[in-house]
Length: 310
Image (cartoon, rainbow, N blue to C red; front, side):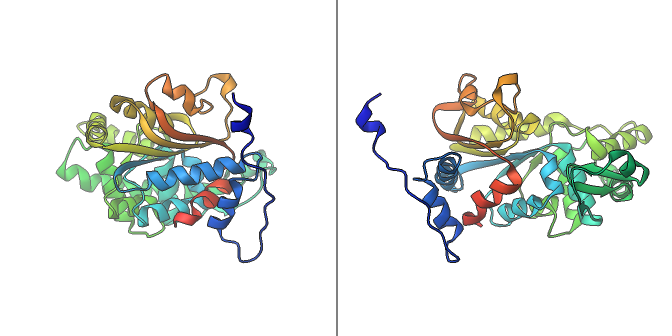
């Protein structure tokens, strides 16, 4: 390392007032020195490139954030046409449908879970989900749609089922609806998980020739990957949604741009904790890619990060 190269940018105090915009604040983060703030500035500069129309733009996230107000942020990305592909988990379908036809409620982490169970309330962190607003509500909504689809096709792709459900929701606050409206495919590699997956299983028990063509989804992802001039991903959290995103991008020698936001740490060897540097060794992120890992909680950091683009 060269001493002169390291000692170039001095730490600058942040000055804000009531007129400071999110864009202004993120620019100030660049020279704030510590600790996560400069990474938010770096992520902002990378997202500017990801949100370019010449880049195939992936958004991956786990289901839990759909139970929160971040659902609205994801919808804004869809409405602004800043996303080309969504890869997520099955619970996203559950929470998006449930919140379109019923309500979730604010609570606290410290409620007694035994008491909640006796009251027929499920706890997702500090989000309260009344029993009747989840499984029964999803079943009531989804089963007639599957009946309708079954009359026309016996082996639908998961993405087609999801798009059809989104159209039926007709709810502007719904991720599934806005994705269908803007022709953004939603891929759920773990489609049989959760309440939505249970509806598919239940329907299969009654109609044994109802076979979900999961490999059709993979074929469609492959077409997207092989036709991409450049690819970029905003990945919120880890698990299967993150892995499916980077897995498929290895077939085009890796992502060109990536922003990864997580609360996990890397020392247990988990995919959720794995930094994007590790993905370089698998050719899932290009060696010369522009990327950043941000350790932090999405419900706080994502609105701050995406606000200037919305």
